[in-house]
Length: 115
Length: 114
Image (cartoon, rainbow over all chains, first blue to last red; front, side, top):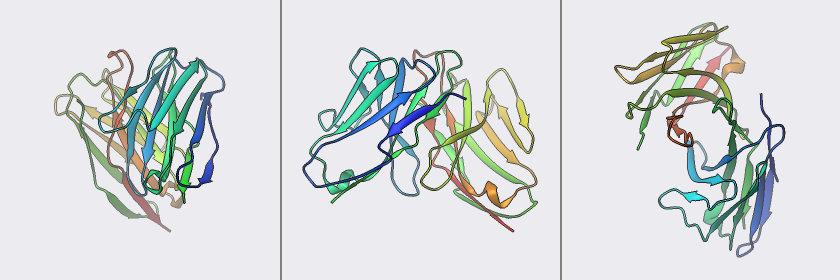
């Protein structure tokens, strides 16, 4: 299947700093990428949909100024958690949709811990 | 928007038994129903999917059934093994809606005891 790479896999930062997470589709072009947040023992909650070359579409309740999403190319989307606070600590996962079949493939996930 | 309900939230079976997880969806326009397996701290992995033009699909010990009229679909795992223990998520989407946003169920934690 298609490969989606996410980096970093885990990050620890101080409160108030910003953290950038990268999501790359390695062997296919992804016009659309999705960012999810997952709390322990809970399901994946869609945060935003990232379309190449345009502004991301955010789900209700997700602050766009807090979670900056950039989709600069057909293989890369980034999520920047700005001025992170402990309540932002979570598992963030990206996914990319293949244009051909519509299947979704997930990145490895990034575990963010804000101290 | 789409709403996906998944049951049960936890399921414990003995090795060799069968396991069934059920999901219902609300949007009759949904036409793609994947199932994902997620081990602790890892990414969800697609294990099987079904599209609305098919009623059943099987891949070795895993099968999925879809009832469009009732708007529900189920995952069946036969001859369960300890390595099947994980959280399983169902999802639904409408692939004809521009971009296919998946709506996930809340997940089922499957525990297979040796």
